[in-house]
Image (tube, rainbow, N blue to C red):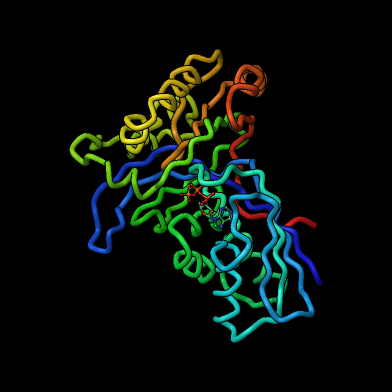
Length: 293
Ligand code: ATP
């Protein structure tokens, strides 16, 4: 096999609370991740030349060693003492720096794809440990489906994935610095007793309505304070017919709405489509990375 095509799925956070600050400057989180149908194509090809090459047409995605996909390939190369050379082509559909873990998903796709293409034989657990070296969201992107995350989001416990739940995604085109958001966070304002247990229980029971009514992200407070227009978009999204709950994903700025059915999702999409940077319907996905035939 010379080439492998991997779908790198985005994620949303159905719940996110910051539970403490660590000595290394990171924050301990409690979060619930879910993979979604929106994905980037990551095509990995064996080459005659000697280096790792990344190609991506998106102007804000670096084509050098700053790219997380490049770093993932380098990590596996170093671990096995060299694997020859590869080209990684990334076709972006996931908005960049948008709280959807696009870069992490690309890195997860490379870890999974290179492991298969070169028959390296690393276990899923080992790949997830490599992933944690690259970024907090990479282990989940490899894991896929639904999971409860603790630590910096890298300690995962599987949850039952919600199947084909209609979603509407909306990105107002504002780039948010994750580091700034965490700096502005006021811990005393964010604590919500038992909120994590409540939403987790709804998911375990498959109660999508209960889940949609319990969505929570403590990072909305600092982001909405700095960008009231994002709060206004969320209010508008929440009022759409068929919307059972709306939330900002990760550190933003993407908002998502859990919709009652795909028709209401499409109707709302047409209302927003020409007014925001990015708007699409999608569904929850049971997988994070997927090798195409
Ligand atoms: P997260 O939800 O994990 O915080 P995000 O979705 O907010 O991530 P990304 O799309 O991963 O953000 O992009 C964050 C930054 O990473 C961007 O500024 C981008 O330049 C850089 N980056 C590096 N590699 C990639 C990649 N393969 N795809 C997208 N962005 C990348």
